Length: 126
Image (tube, rainbow, N blue to C red; front, side, top):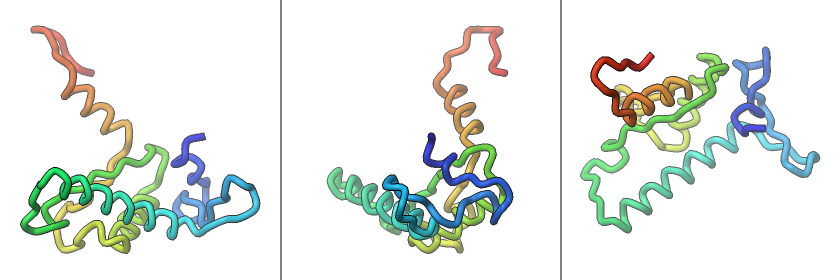
């Protein structure tokens, strides 16, 4: 199963499970704790790459627009939770308009297909 789909829970609190069961089937962790830690790791990893490649960001984290994809089945409530967790992970500055864009995976796939495809005269993307 896809990790993001394991999170999905019909009904409940916005469609995201409150607890994630570990692979041992015994222990569980709060979903919030897992996601905040994952977002902190992503941020640290990206800044390591910037440092290794001598990429300067004069305003630090504020110079990045983050894009986070979620399954199309997720609710707006679930998307808002992701944003709150990104704020807790200090990934984004809530005072910057669209500093984080949470988008549905099919929309990103469509945009990617449009950007990567070379169409001949008269062809269209539907």
